Length: 338
Image (cartoon, rainbow, N blue to C red; front, side):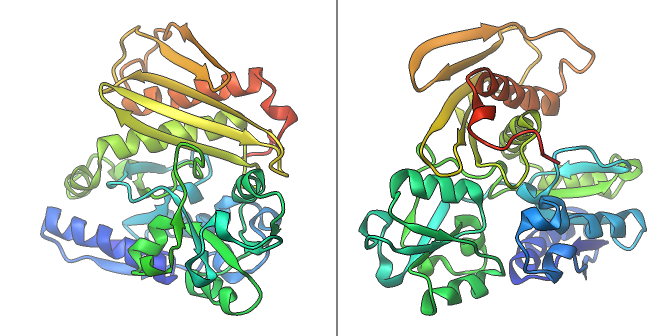
């Protein structure tokens, strides 16, 4: 079986882990197929290149062309819209979704000197940094992990990266602080992987056996809830939106925030529904930081009422609707997602 991947150290490392799971589940030999994407070929900011899809389209083209049998992405790189002919086959267990600060001399964010230069390519991270430290000079950053870390020896005092990527490639020692998820929600899907297959082969052997072994229900539901929020907000990579879903007892809880790009203000909501996901009419609950009031809405009856993926995405849409009702579009450039 051939598994497609980008060629970066991080992509190959995380795809190798998936390939090992496929081999164990099916008893088949598994080979990696490295595909170069537009995002790998350019150092321009993602927004200029057309958003998150620049890391995805070449891999999907290879899958549809039969060059690969499966492809692996970081799920936060996936556009939120459907891709004809391709299905989400599995979401393996999620790694640490937190953002990580890597700073000179092991300093934390609060310890950085006034006017410190901090690098990130994410408007969300920039807004969150400025919300806590408006004195910082936040500058753009692109490249692989090693390229970004090298900037600490050049012109930057700190950078912010995904903790999961650093952990996966054995660079956790570079982390000086992991930001708490409660106050610093990450990019939707951060830390999770997506394994995609062709629609026609989703339920066929040996694909079905491999995907069943790889898929982790809580990781899948939490990632899809976060992506449901992103899709409903029509928020692309230029929008400062953070989301964090987790299982708390018998509920799946989604916390989401939209920031003004300069970090001067934000809106935050939480939404929840029963876990495991069911089609019951218990309803979703939404609340805000500003109020303890809980607003419930009945879950509409539909043909997809018992589809767990749809129920997870619906949780995200409910949270997005609450954010929009409270004026999120006045804070951030929404309505330009992919």
